[in-house]
Length: 525
Image (cartoon, rainbow, N blue to C red; front, side):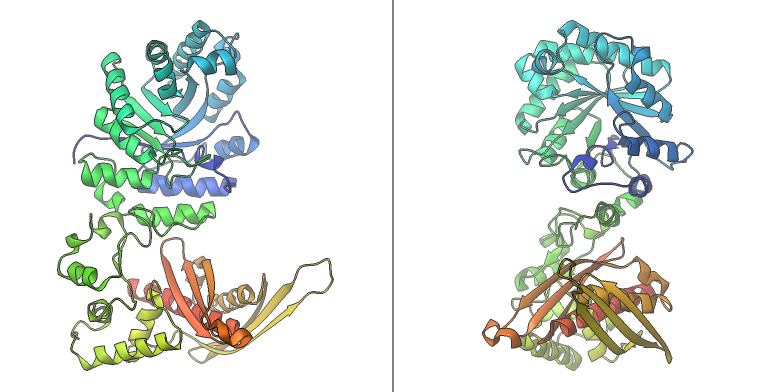
């Protein structure tokens, strides 16, 4: 690997400003631990001067020992017209006892005169005083030059002066911020190149995605000489989000030759993305580059055939290099090349021409005729193959179930409950649960019953649930197809069920989902 690029993650600060995200203190601790295990260099964890939750978080983790990352407290330069020692925000930052701090300050004359309403000279003193004060307290200091690129376009000399003030104050890194997200890659390269020629300390880049260019701009800034890249791990952030580190990191390391993570840490990229999405209560986009479920999914027959011969024919990097996996999708445009790879996972001796292969394909075609769609539902396909080849031993049997839905009063929402009876190796277990609808209640009851025998089921939750009416002309007697996506915080898998009864279709998909999880656990052992 080549020159080191420092990874500065702001998921817990900038990412927390995204619409729909509300991290609890426990959530923040879990994200911090995930990022540290993955090997990022800096974790910007919040602004202790802005809210009680961040203060509680920093108090909770004061004695935490991170394996790799430096924890960062965030805040602003001192306020205008006061001594730096009297600034309450800076006092709160020092109280966190983090080894590193990130301080934002103004570099755009418009913001100085019209927003914070101070003089240009006082703003430079605010920056220099704050850097010197924090360095005197032994901190690793990054200065975030807010709106730097807009400021540079308006008044390049003053924007540079703001950086020089931070440098003179002793800052360790100067991060150039495209706060409005409106700068183009060519502009980024030109401006960073000019800035680098005028300063003597390392530069960083902090891009927002309002123009859809945050990743491209970050990569261009590295090309121009920055050595610290800021962003959020899945691109979470205010408005259109921040630069997505899960895309930037592999591009820098696998394609541009820089060092961001160790090879082993790079292979944690996908599992870390799944975990952080789970904690954030967001579904990880299938199309997310490198870490998405569809990033290395192949559907077209000719594509599949080529990938089987040489993966480089349709894959820009090996999926395992980022901890992802190749997926061969079952569909009407795929053929025996699709199914044989999955069959060989169970029995490597079989070929495209084997009788068993024909048997499996005939069964798949029969089920597709009934309304099944196996594209993207690999867990159901893998279980089906094992059953057809006589290699499947059920982990449990569902002996009975009942669901009840009721609306007790007009001012109360509909509630549902479910009771299930399962059998595991001759031992029965009955459990009941309430849920938001009969399927949710069934899911909870089934998992509660199975947790007695298989504790890892506790980690599984549904992340997506889709219902499709197959033959709408049959009205309420129509068949429905239910597609369920599940996750244990490390992996994501999808299962499918079909029936004229939506509850039964859901139960088929749920059962496959749990069976697949238990099968994976057994194979890992």
